[in-house]
Image (tube, rainbow, N blue to C red; front, side, top):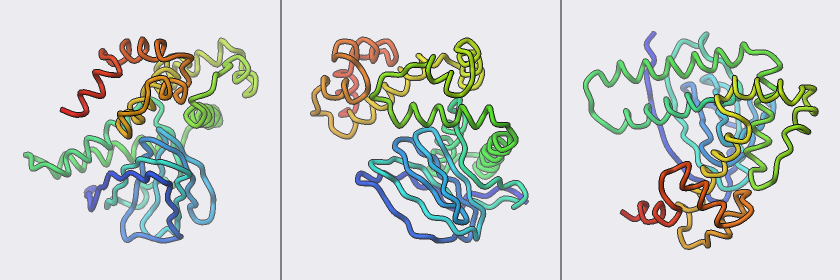
Length: 245
């Protein structure tokens, strides 16, 4: 049975969202690009935040609650039911986000071999979820670590204390973090803060840079501007101007 896309939508909920318990005729995958919330799948509550995604089978009762401003991509698809691993997952390296965004772009364009490419992308996403479902407690621990960071990005982080909380030495914590995520904890935090800053700048370009800096965990607007330039190759002001073009 080939993998077939039925519908894909990118949506922004500025004031949160509550969806009552419901089912779909097709399998569903929801990727959280920005924000946080929770999903109830067959009555079991699971939290999600930026960089998390969840999957439900066709006919499975589920409901979603977005706790505040949230940007998501969701899609419905056909695929063999035995390849569907229901649950929530963490996109450690951004591989799933990249595939979901490519799937979204494919759906909007008419290109040669479109159906074949869509089927390949859905297969990739299902494989990533299957691999995640087969990983052990260590993976679950780091999913919680990333969720905590994403939900508290404006706060300072003590990684030594965080390592101890999960019964790791600091060196072991850093090693596993880099192995899982691809970068150090410090660089991950900076990347997430810049991602958050881009989101806020796109929502309201008239906000002061100082206000955005503090809301993203930077100590000053100058630190924010320096990190933004280093990570994106442009200043925050230049980024705002690029949104207008």
